[in-house]
Image 1 (cartoon, rainbow, N blue to C red):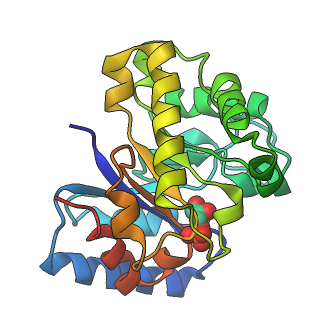
Image 2: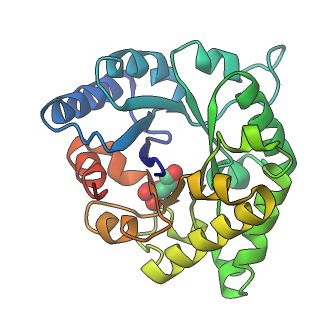
Image 3: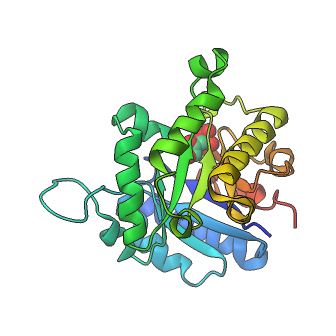
Length: 255
Ligand code: 13P
């Protein structure tokens, strides 16, 4: 059975105090109901990563993720954070290729492929984001765009490495907009992604890869999205900034 996963991406939110408070609230909420069938991953900003990782150590079924890492192992790259540094906090996951990194920081598939390699070399599991923007969706180019992202950033990996990847489908037009992909759109795209992985890596790997949905997913709509056959959980932005909402989203994953 595929792993069910909910990731809370805090993005550039929460100061040190605020982030620690949110982590404490999450710990409190999950000390009474564990939702053991779901892997819960918190992705705070770098500055909070070590302390949140430390706090969550006591809680079963929780992990942390970085929101990014540099594509080179170490060196004179002022302001950057390496995969090894992320791993040294006790963090096992890293989000790579988020559309905000692609859009605001010019990260392209070629660079993202290098980040994936560096993450894997440092034993971090990439949570790799793909998604089309509204213009591409309206032009009916979404399948093509997704295929290109998969091909250029991930399909160079040998099977043993690809099988470690978590994929997050985040249509850019659904991120932070309050507009969620319909059940039909989400299931259609997740099924397409899985079928392309099947063509490249075979049924064993394609049926085991977790494909998460992201984009205005919240306590109200998570249940029906997560009920889709090929949706294995979510990558949650806004709704992960409240312990109550995050808990409700996690509990929307069917047992
Ligand atoms: P929202 O849930 O705020 O739309 O953000 C989704 C996202 O980008 C998670 O990475």
